[in-house]
Length: 437
Image 1 (cartoon, rainbow, N blue to C red):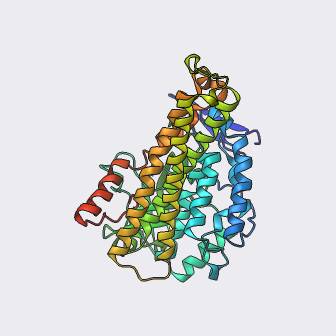
Image 2: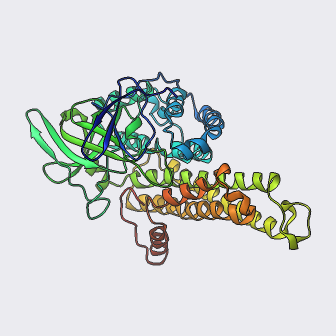
Image 3: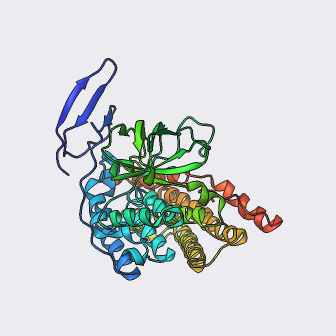
């Protein structure tokens, strides 16, 4: 990573750090880092993924590289600019672009596998592109042909999409205060967004706002335009390098052709929520896989057996063997449910769906999300119980697995997944249609 140079301006209560043009964003510190003028990241030309097999091959190649520095990036909160650019260059960002626009249009099974493979290596890098693919799905469902051509071509060229959706101090996560205000032949928007995963690394920021009729729309904001500022103020103890902080909007100009009617996808029987949740479940399954891999390696190479076990190696302890077996079975169940849910979405492709179809897909993905949540938390916690006190030493950075699992699984409460499945089975009640089910 290049060494950043800075201009420094001292205020009355804090130090404001501004990267010089063309330089890499710094690591987070006790100060707030803001891009002066919010310059767009450089554009890295992207390869073109041919098909599903090529996408899986590319994901494995990236994961092998990403895993090498994952612990250090987490420990230092080193923002993964190099890795994000490698991701873009690989062409994985365009794998869901429809074939008629030049993309591979891979299956949902493949998309879930790509997210799982990357997340097993570094779940922050698994999570960063999630909103990118969420927008591409919304574009497929609600975009005009001209909008689809414009944004699909940009993505295939290497452009990344971020997110500016939730607002931090509203009543709940669906409560949006930012509104479009007419301005000649376009609009203006102001607001403050948080949990903006991917925005710092993005060239375009899809932003949720309300139109004059109070309907949800997504406006795509170009990085570098006046009024847009991305603030690197993400301070969570897990998923530390997703940069899921603040996006500030100060009277930003919005062109009419950059607005997508997201409210249509909320009302119509389409797979918006199941698609979003499939990626969430895949990230959790990847976290579980990475934690279990590290647990097995530590037990084989470093752990000592408990004195009362009367065995030579920790891997011969019958209780350790049984617990690892249980975790492996639970992980396999999560992976199987993930594939099954993705197949449900694949089977729905090209069909006109009704409310029952969408409900069945939501429930299939909810099952996968519930089990992947549980196994991610269990594997990352059991790692320490089975490996012993030595595993807690900072030099091994194994705590990152639990911190990542705990933070990412807070995205939407698993208790409501169990409720949705139970209510569906017992009472035939379809779950609500939104991005969290």
